[in-house]
Length: 321
Image (cartoon, rainbow, N blue to C red):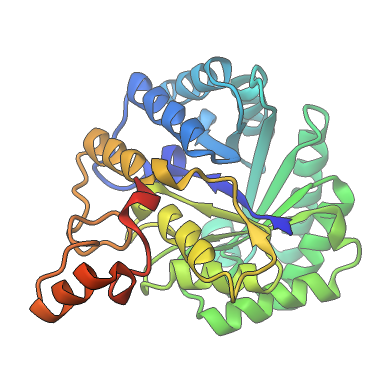
């Protein structure tokens, strides 16, 4: 049985949702609940982005026990320095997460750099981060729109440089589950020494496919999923933690070889805490945690549930708290 690492980015990508501003105390409260939930990695913030974010990440790292605490950084020395300083006191281990765009559109219009320069920066930034910690994650931003051969070259190179997790982000929610699964499978099969690193995925919900893409990736060899509570995040949001975890738990016939460490009975409590502190109302029809998720209006459904709950409930409400 393989462990599926649950990498929670509620406090980083989730807080980037317009309107979802959290103060240091609120971030720490959520982090403590994420410990109770059983997540493996908490991406606590983007330390270089502001003094407040740096302080919050440092507070979380020094205050909680259990999960690895991760700080995000661009492929810039100052970012990596800040990520290390903010996370170095983490009791469960510190991770530096370096990202650099690799798609043609990002390289041409955002970074104005050629492939050779991007590859050099990727390798150099991982080597620089390695002087601080052995737990380094690298993300080729907009991977799902990156030319596959160049993506493979970047991934192979950063692993050789010392990256222990390689994340394949669907940054703008462009991917389709079947093609995304094939991409992950290709990375697993074609890249030398891929077993030196964990393959991670980070999917956005612009086409409503973030969870489907994440699950397709797990089916094809990804062993870390980056997600947020209630699916909050940039634009249409991130892959929903609760949906991924409960899909894998409910469909053991499809995922017989993977399991998570999530205490599912803490899901509802975590969802409501994040909703309260961000002021983001959970839609009534939201899977797993919505107000209507276990309510039945039709008489035929009510009759079935009274006789045997499994007739219309594939998940027990008690299982998610």
